[in-house]
Length: 135
Image (cartoon, rainbow, N blue to C red):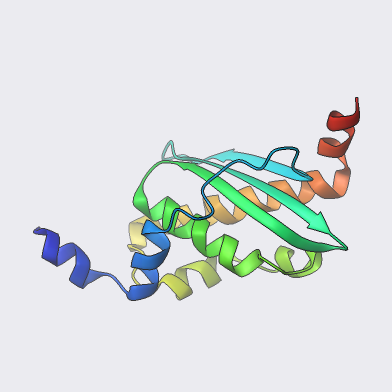
C-alpha cells in the first residue's frame, strides 16, 4: 500500500480525528479520570473537568495505534460541552459511524475510547478523584 492509498482510503472525518493533537494531554487535578487497556494492548486515559454539571474540559492520552487516537478524538468532540448524562449516551457505534472508514477489525478501538470516557465519568460521579485531591 502506498501513502496515497492511505489518504484516499479514509474519510475526512477519520483523517482529522486521527491527526488532531489538540486534546492529547493530561489535565492536572481532573474532576474525573479513567484509564483502560484493550485486549490489543492499546491504552487510553481520559481526564475531565466539570463545571455546573457540564464537561468544561476533556483530554486524553492514547498509547497505541492511529485508530485509537481517531476514536479518542471523536469521543472528545462528542463529549465536550455536554452534561454528564449526555456524555453517558455516547456509544462506540456512534464513533464508528462518525469516522466512516474505521477498519472493521479496529472497531474495538471505539469501544476502548468510549470505555475510557465512561471510567472518567464514573470516577467523577463517585467523587474518588476529588477525595484523592483533598486527602
